[in-house]
Length: 111
Image (cartoon, rainbow, N blue to C red):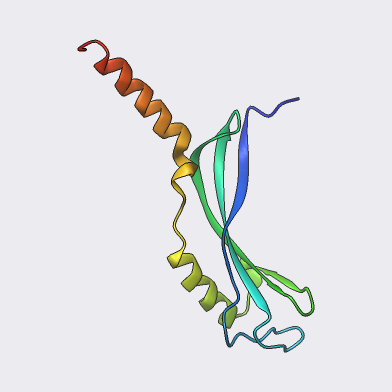
């Protein structure tokens, strides 16, 4: 059965900050931090943003942390990355196209 509506996610930004030590294997500069954006869709057309969340993964030991369990040093780097990550405009493409269609319909009466 085809999903008419739901949530999907897309990785927005990924970075390996300097000076972060993996708390599991104690390797330095091996932790990748990624910010993932969630959007809600209708017929697989994105309509609205559902927020951002983050994860971190060590490339040395493959240990991953979700946001609530991240150590404070990784959380600080995640907050910095999240602040510089913008929500893409295409997350709102369904709403934008509906507004354009309504405006075209309104202005088509006058031209």
